[in-house]
Amino acid sequence: MKSKVVLLRYGEIFLKGRNKSYFEKLLIDNIKAKLSGIDCEFVRTQNRYYIENYDESLTDEIVRRMKQVFGLHSLSVATKVKTDYDLLNEAALEYAPDVNTTFRVTVNRADKSLDKNSAQIGADIGAYILKRRAGYKVDLHRPQLEIKVDIREKGFSYVFCGIEECAQGMPVGCSGKGMLLLSGGFDSPVAGYRMARRGMQICAVHYHSFPYTSEQAKQKVIDLAQVLTAYTGDIKLFIVPFTQIQFAIHEKCRADYMITIMRRIMINIAERLAEKNGCGALITGESLGQVASQTLQSLTVTNDAVNGLPVFRPLIGMDKYEIIKTSEQIGTYKLSELPYQDCCTVFLPKNPVIKPSLDIAKKEQAKIEDLETLIEDAIANVETVELSPME
Image 1 (cartoon, rainbow, N blue to C red):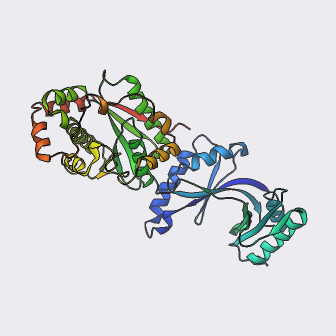
Image 2: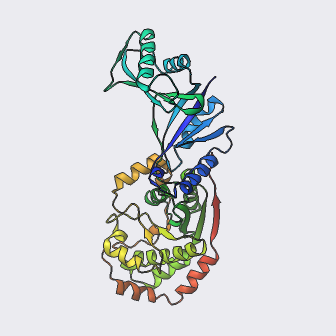
Image 3: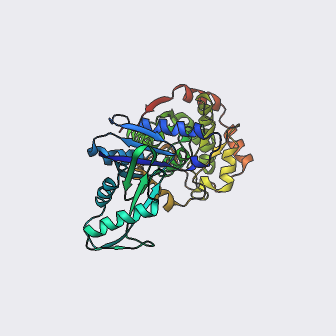
């Protein structure tokens, strides 16, 4: 018997003590959800997972999906055979292309009932390959090709020849739920991705100033959230009508403080929505010093508008190049570069304050006498979009 399997390895969960089973259950649930629609079998053994009994034409699709599961460290596409020396030789030979190269065979033997140890089995398989591949030479230190043989208990072995990195991190759901302030730019989708990678379930809020921001701009954000679901699982996106609040800021407040006050109101609304939806933190895509609203002083003034929830800024020490590189990797870059303006660019002052004063910001914000009513109206008219992964 011989078949292809996908061998999965997890990472940080190894470091967990008595709570390890909790994290492992979440990871397994996320893996199974990712395999939705694929006829296959998920097998769990000690510290190892296998995907078996699937149509081999779906191997690449399974690999693609598994690379998006946070908590998985790496994977290998392997050949599963009964633990028989002849079958192991034949399976290993399939991973040895007929070219000139150096190679080694590495054997891990969990089945201690065999009459040969790991080194002997590896040497025998290597000799078998050398007889059939004229251009091969053994190199135990820096081989160009390494064939791995994992001999497990219960009479089965796995032969493979490569390890592919997965998303790593922690299983989504193990670190609570956070509310992501999602704009149409490069930064906030990456921030959501990075917090999901640390196990946080994601909700999102977007501020839409129709008609000054178009339906295309709103759809762009919905599409960005949809891309994120491949990594985060389901996302509930709250689209907040923000036009009347922006008009009020424009009419009542100093021009150079408009962005500062707008950010304070946004994060205040986000906190209210977070508390209503069981979120224990806010998430922003701010990077220190990137723009006027992201200086130390600006962030301090923005934080003052939050009543209790922590604000996570996973990009705070990243530069734009690093952020864009990640956006390319996760598939949000092309959407983020579409030229549809979000509400942050509407009524943008020529010279926004770089080092705002908290006292001045509060005084300017207080000029909007009906602000609480405007906020309540905006929350009452939120549009909710529920998104699920599209495999």
